[in-house]
Image (cartoon, rainbow, N blue to C red):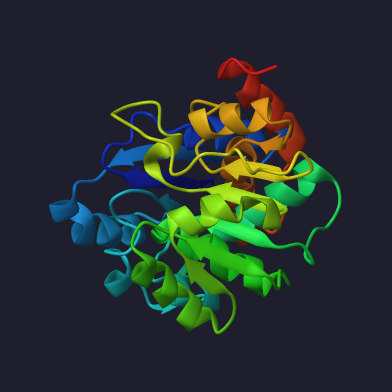
Length: 276
């Protein structure tokens, strides 16, 4: 029987997940398909019930449902439980729905793939304290990164994540700017990465080390304002595209037991997004 998968969100038209997963199915000769589903918040409960009744093998969850879907699932992976957010649902062999969050681990894999060597002993600065920062912080801790600092406009929000982690420290954006030379890895997760709206840089990069690795979790545009500024300072740049592809690949592995080819997919999407 043909397997089928989906991604639910509101909006959903922009998602590149269907093209990515369907290309992997074709490359690996897997008889399956993946479709986008526009699900509004008031439709979420019935959508989950419908996916279960109609036999979906699993699905991805995007904005605004990552937290709201949790009450409709039977169990959560440890990382998803810590994060309080789900982006991947697996129908288990017992027919239960299990939620995972692959975003943070996807970022860590993309970072290590991009720089080619582990930097787990290096000081990390996470800029922002929203859901993405929370996921990446827990994933980095789980993967052995031992020196994590979170900077945020509201320091108490950063401190809440640090307290839950039981390690690291929380600082203000001003402190981050003043001590930027202390960090080897900087990850930008505020709205400064977005190409729409009135964005502003979280802080100046005057004290950025040339040897620093600077990442942004936004993948469209590939070169965010923050990355452009970091590149001008001579830093090594990591776009958000690798995180997007790897979070999808980890979901694919949860569903089907195989890890797809991420390198070719990153190259394909980079070309579509106008990258070199």
